[in-house]
Image (cartoon, rainbow, N blue to C red):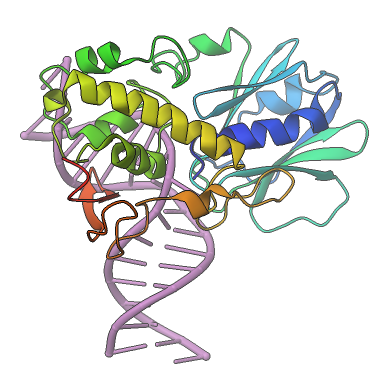
Length: 271
DNA sequence: ACTGGCTCCTGAGGGC
DNA sequence: TGCCCTCAGGAGCCAG
């Protein structure tokens, strides 16, 4: 379920706990994630040192000398570091065990996440190569969104959530950013004015930055690698607030479905 | 080329 | 207490 802030919070949590450690072995309890967990992991990783813990979009990149482990948390994935001998929980599917006895443990009830292995440049992996810019990159700007959306009838909210347009903006932050930018979520992407895309770019960046600072958003079960919940939940202006009063104008927050996802908005503030 | 719909899977919560 | 229904933070794939 994590969006970019939750993945970044996870990255920051696990990095100091695994960087420089040597893998002893990989234990796969259940290989049936989004794609089957590659048997390459158990062959390639033993003896390898974690050289870097990076993020691209919602993927975590664990870099080793011989390749990169790409981890996607899906909707319900969690990573935590615990002693290998500590008690296992239901839905602990994969463990990367280090020579110091600690273990990077992947838990994912719905199993929508993935563990992919690539020996080559991870940015050229099929799952990553066609992704759009990072929201904090210089090439994510108003004119870019304006051009990308030209002539498109798709509603602006699913447009914003399209990882080929910009990465990392999931269902919660898409609603929040559109609220902050004053744009109705069901407006056709191609009808949004360039000046409104400028507001949207700023809104996306502000919201994601604030959410990262708060350690992510916990709706149901997000927790960081150290088990802390996210504290951005208290700052959500519209998400999950259907029927309640808009914090800005007092109108009733409404809910509608766009692209099979719940969207929340203020009919007065957003046009 | 776009768009909407379906899909993977488990669990929580509401209504009866 | 239990059953059934809907919904959930992602995103690939398919038909039209």
